Image (cartoon, rainbow, N blue to C red; front, side, top):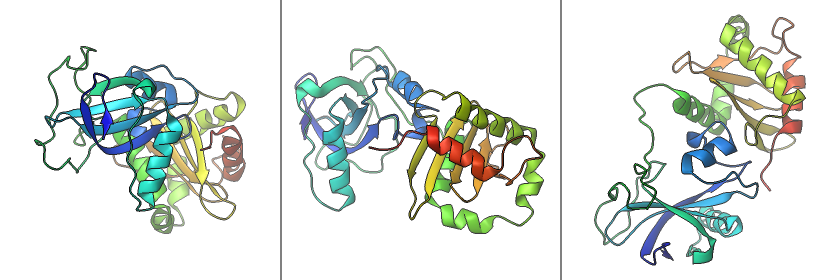
Length: 262
């Protein structure tokens, strides 16, 4: 339980990081875009997002600048340990009505989760809410790439021998790869290219651009999702008709410019 900006109680349900290297893709293609959605400056150290309910059951997202505290809480919870996440009032940047993410849990003993009235947080904004899953768009495209990253082994096994060759002729794929190559020459906004540990000497890459998302494993395969191809996953060939370097070279270049978790 932590204190809200106005002194009320907040029953904490979960928390997530919002940093250049680690942020919910549902919020944007890059760190500045995610910050803009929440109305906070894209400060390099980043933030922690604390999601909870007040005593009336209303949903609140509290943005704090104590990133280390939130990171410790998340690590403790991931290990199955209890951790009372109680940010100091001085670390609170803003309290926003609603939740930007879908949660299936609720605080016991208080009313069911609901949004407070518009303007209750003093911003005049409509309460935050997760996007609809019914229509394909940028959010669903990024979430699809995140899912592939989580299920990498299964997706790697699904790739047919001719899958890459069939996808190579797709103009959207060629555009995405060309823009990804551009990132290696002129680094994009923070968070467009992220690299995380994938075991042994491999890294998982998550790369986003206007209308496309790429997920890859260094030394391995890559997949691209496009706004223009709802629900489709395009396997990236190791050579794309000379339009981009060999895939391994492209991924190595992206890994060099990627931001990494501290």
